[in-house]
Image (cartoon, rainbow, N blue to C red):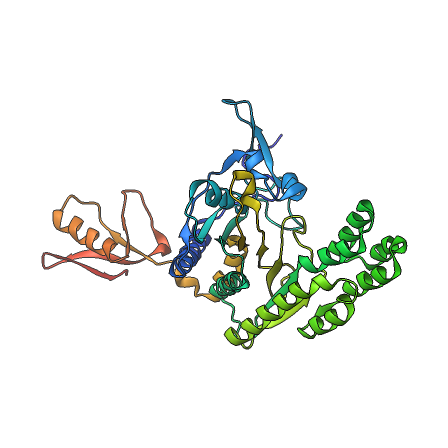
Length: 395
């Protein structure tokens, strides 16, 4: 039998030096970006008790979370599958300033199974959240920062590379409240809308009052450019007047984005129910051409911190750094990893001083070991000339 001890679990990958350097460069660039916007970095633990780790996100996150027993307390711990609940806990329990908190993060998560075919089970999640502000201005800020995050990976809103997808769970919630349908039917209608399954939706609507069935059927097809919102008012407000507020909010976001990023592609999907049991308002995602899933996404999720004793307005976004890296690494020179300066092994104080100075300047200096062949990684070397150590090209 062959020895397969080197194999990694399906969907779990490792990152070797060149790609690791690129990923770390992008991580630093993004955290510097968030810092420049006033977001403070937090580093949550890799494991927590599941009752805190799964708060607010329901069954979807529960299925993604790997669980282990804590041998000290006997309680069940989870390896985080999403950093957002942890950041919400930090805001609610550890940072008790009553004002606005802007927090950012970057760290590995683990999924018990892939979110979809071909997805990594070990993403590196990066993102930013605003706590303590319920206005649309906070949503606009995190959308703007999400778009800058995608641009940092090598895309441009100015050239039409990026499409912003917008929705609002409040529109469906308003319709459901007005329709007052049976809870089981309601759950199946929401599920059909989530899956974009028109046949399943039509079948479930057979038992729903005609005006609402007609409106839900139309809602499933209300997607496209901003003109969708005008159509939505004509179709939805007659049976669900409370949907006016979320529709107006979406209009406000679109108007702001057009001012900030005139060439941004905007797509509106009023039946977008990603995270329906978690989000409480606007939902948004960024897409790029020829990539079949969102490259970053987020939304408003008010009151998640209430279980920790502090109910707070919240909005934010996240992305997988590994996915962003695919495009970032292809948009920069392959020579991005700096070459090495080779130095001889010696106790010469002047050599050690020269090496220290080069390292302070950001150079990579490797002291050559007796049996080492540094190959193509080295393009320069430290040599002594006239009692002075100088850098010259490798011969």
